[in-house]
View 1 (cartoon, rainbow, N blue to C red):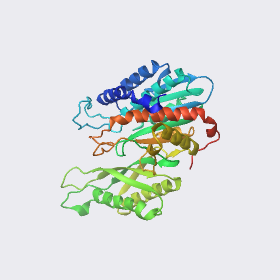
View 2: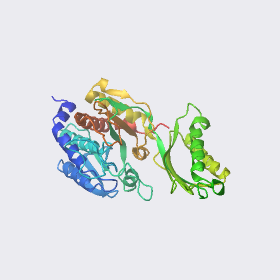
View 3: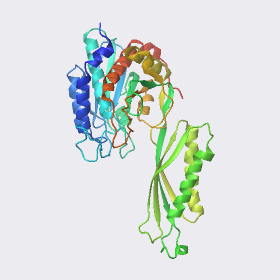
View 4: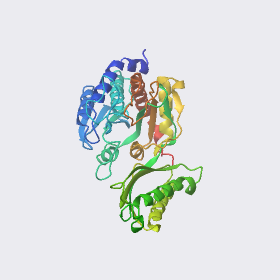
Length: 403
């Protein structure tokens, strides 16, 4: 009798072909029409019922196998506004747009899992219940109402009656062939902010007649750095980053206005509150020096918190599918993910799958790429999680995320 991984391995060429096709044709957030159509077409032929246009471009597909729990598997679909620098035959054909975070691989792995689960149902090997596939738009950004694809899908019923939800992210920076997961907080929450520092323009030869907004902004940036270094406990985890600074009109004119943009990252609400407070205090430095500062903070994704029982089920299932040495405990990381919103709706587990090349590539980088042989590992892992959670759904009753 063939194992789940052996069955997945027969799909390797197909999954690589699909991943490369999607890589050639990347689509930005809420514009993933081609990607969604390809995913829908492939899983519909396997016997899944299909709903399209969910959260604008998302797809919800269901494989029904009698009465039982509903288990969801999620893959995000959007690309990034990055110009690819890889010299490969499957490089992006869309100028300035690239799959630089592996969402093309996520779609390919979920379609592979869909095939494995459909085959298991047809063979009478799938436990009773429903597998729901979520092909989700816009993980990387939010719309004008500050809602990402996960939030939009939740609002349109994609998580209705879900007993457990699993997501898998390819890791181009992690050793290939290993699945990384742990219970509790695994990825940070993140808010974004815009700050405008205003002074008064003057000629550079007469600086005393103005208030230099660049100098004000410099003091503000330094004050922001103290937020983490001196205002939260050393054992707490938090990051305040200013990633963009724009200001000035000429080399011989004092800047009247400087714009700052950045992020706040945290695991606990008290740390989040402290960083928000210190950001406002930093703006006060500019005002103390004679200028003015305004701040707009936009709430982002909460932390990704893996449920204890869902994670235990995933750990056992992946170990059975890929081998016990393939499962590794994963320390929390400061990156953010809107899977966190799905995890607020049902017991959840978010998994990283190592797929590093030699040398490893960085996510959100123009030369991002992965070891495509890991696609079958991801397909097998997702199928294993769905099968095990259908079988062991009683373990999830009353389960709540760790906080």
